[in-house]
Image (cartoon, rainbow, N blue to C red; front, side, top):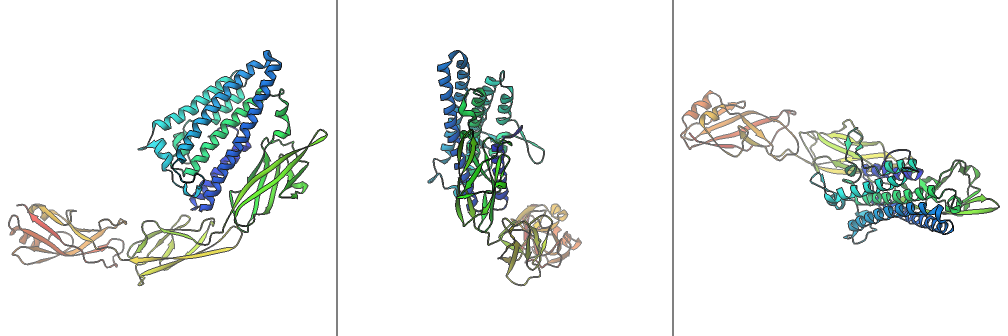
Length: 514
């Protein structure tokens, strides 16, 4: 969901998604999946708090209707319609979330929610959007048009925000191409990400309802302007920290106000220094602690009139272990082959630059990209050693062994066909003799340098190159219809590595049809 000037809460949610996607690219650990799942729970808890706040708004408005019916009844009617739109869409999305997790043995086992198939099967099929996906988008559009229609006349700014927040127009991706909104936001994402995204939409709905009610009741409901209704939000600089790192983050209020500064802030039993309390936010910096989930408890204290208003702080963050092994994978197979350039991807999660060493290994351009040539390595396996430095300056290293294999046995071809081939004499005279590596992952070209040509009842002819010479054509003309011709002892070489010796090439049998 994008567009317009985003709220601090929305910026926080978007930041969580950026961090999550970045960690996916770095082969993120199960601890990070679990940490992201915990964020979904915290967002759900925040939604419950917003629901309670909205309920309080509605109760206050109902009391005002009883006091001044003529003045507040029109407001109450619009508020009721807004709540109806919101509750219907929130319930609809909750049913989708329930359906996605109903077959899970433990709906809170987030480390198992790394596949996208559950939501993909519901919303997408064969590259197209399913009726369920179209219904989902339609429900959001109905909510957007319904709520914006209620507000258009008296609250055009809020109506515009609703249209932007719940826009389902095509989204421009990083390649500057227009992408369908539903596919851009949900297709191919791990289940835990999709669940959090759906919870975020519910949060947008509830916060929109809160914004509408706040505007309607501005200057009327005293509780709306009271600091007791502010929410303390902990925003870590990142979603998880290595053991031994320093936790860094911020605590901001749900309604960020640059003129607002706390009288006192206490976190985990310690009062923060005055310089930590800045405009509209409080800056945190303390040791992250041991591996596991860590709580952040405390309170804001504000002076309001002659009294002190206390706002509780309650959040948590995850501390994950330092990576102690590199992630090394052959891009096409689990072994490396002699005679070819084997592409490799070598990285260590959380380390921007690594040093990799092994016989025949060299860099190949992009970050983490290498090629490996083991043609001259006589051993049956090769060991790749990798090292790097973590952001805190400590070193990490690892190694992994790969088996070394020769290129598989090639097979001979006539006219591009292998095995037993049927063709005419004239066709065979014009055909070229070749060699291929069927079902081999590398696109390798072989050049035939010689072969032997055997016709039944005739002496074997040696031929240089890849086509029949005059002697071979002469014995071919003496062959009878239905007889077999053999192309044997085929010799070939790699076009990219002529020195590499290929295994014996399988022969080709040609049955003459005339």
